[in-house]
Figure (cartoon, rainbow, N blue to C red):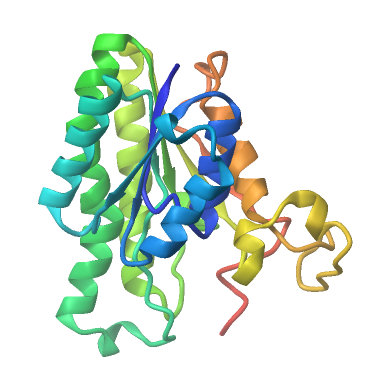
Length: 252
């Protein structure tokens, strides 16, 4: 049984990833920030699989929380096979770089870039021992080309840095059977984050070229593929799951 650490894996886009991992027979250690009641619904959804689920309260901006997260995962399951860096602080208010406070900037960098560095430092040694590991980070459409994203400067800067980190660790750890890739979700919002592809097929989305809303399952099934035993030839790659939508140029 392989084990996955999934940050922010109890709701939103991370929820479907967690469900897919459990349905594949893996065990999971998943984090939540404040909404413990929502986190507990994961146990309700898998009543016979509580032994394969560990919930940990953690703020990815705090290094000590990340250290405790990995410690608990290894103590309970003895291994780390998949590191899914789903958590990523985000500022929803649209504002220009000059209107960001220093605290907001630091939160974006710490939560979206530094957190991945710390979690890699903590988990890659176990992956090396196993000669197997899958790291999946999250970006945004166009991140691989260092696109500017108006009103999202701090978040975008962190994620563009993460592109390089994703590729670098892929090259450095390939000899150990470890892959590292990035997935870039489209404009998946609201309840669609936890919805299935089948649910979205009956709903028209005129903004997305494929004609339906993106869902959490679209992201989860891509991550499932990247985590496969036979996906070892795929590393250092940036996957965009946007339905053809130009996300960063929607607002001018």
